[in-house]
Image (cartoon, rainbow, N blue to C red; front, side, top):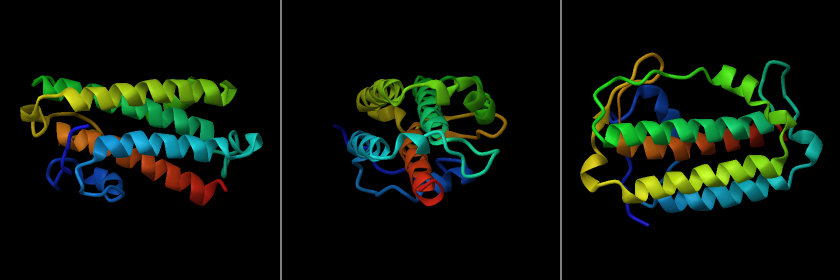
Length: 175
């Protein structure tokens, strides 16, 4: 897998710093995506079934909803990276993550089905970033609403850091 060095401040919106802080600057982000998927899958499967639909507060997401949110976010941010890499000039709008969680009906899904989708999206993300032209990685794309300007490089780090943020959150609040 290729080396993609970490994005620097200014390559991503300020809110994304919460995700960037979880990631090393070794350039092995694609390897981390692959390894983290395997580690997170093993961790989630080690949890008792009744915990997967638990909410630590009534208005918070369940673990299954968090997992589907990670998948949705990765799919959306990979699409943004593709558009930015191809020098798309139209701004991209944000998405309503709470609405996505509600309509995902994640709690009615089996864990196997969630991880089947998760793995397919992850493999697609790794393949996309492994094959983008080097010249595209520092290309800046533009968004509106809650999503602001970011480079293609920053988006792969966003994906990995966002996943780690939520896994750490599960460990802190759900167990």
